[in-house]
Image 1: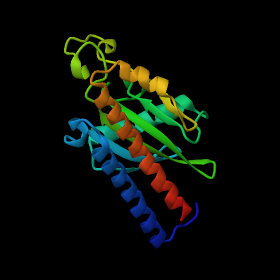
Image 2: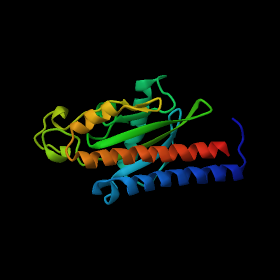
Image 3: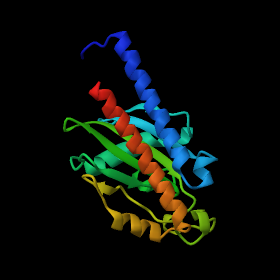
Amino acid sequence: MPKVDPITLSVVRGILETTQREMTLALEKTSRSSVLNLARDYSTTIFNSTPEMILQGQDIPIHLGSFMPAMKAVADFFGEDIHEGDLILHNDPAYQGSHIVDMCVYRPVFYNKKHVFWTACKGHLTDAGGPVPASYNPEATEIFAEGLRIPPIKLWDKGKPQDDILNMILTNMRARRDQEGDFRALIGSCQVGERNLINMLDK
């Protein structure tokens, strides 16, 4: 393993921490629902390509604890089918999601055609479909009564947004405008992280 001098290590650490904070700020300032922009029920993080978590924010601890197995489940699901420009969504507890209304977005970061990082964020949406508003069903006896289960799925494929998939998901949710705004905020947060990481590698 190559040695890194303390100054370079400190600079890289500072950039990574700033990147995560900017991801959090972007999510908070662009989301529509008060669950995200006031209650701050979200988390942002950065993984290497392995994937191992290398940085987490001071967000919701239980999110970050579940992020590690969830990230691995997503990476294992797609295997080698990960490409520059992809954007992956999931909320399914069967793939280590926490619960139905916590939507997870993952963005693989490539540099010189090589996969080097993941940026990821999780946010609590105000509805995920199902028979009751807010997708908290006290009478549920099985997961199908809670809301829309989304296994790992590509919202963007090689840089091309899959608008038909997002439309299908939003069609099954109440308060569509709010949910769409929060999805865009989650996506934007991952893009901010990607941009900063690429800028760091350029330097």
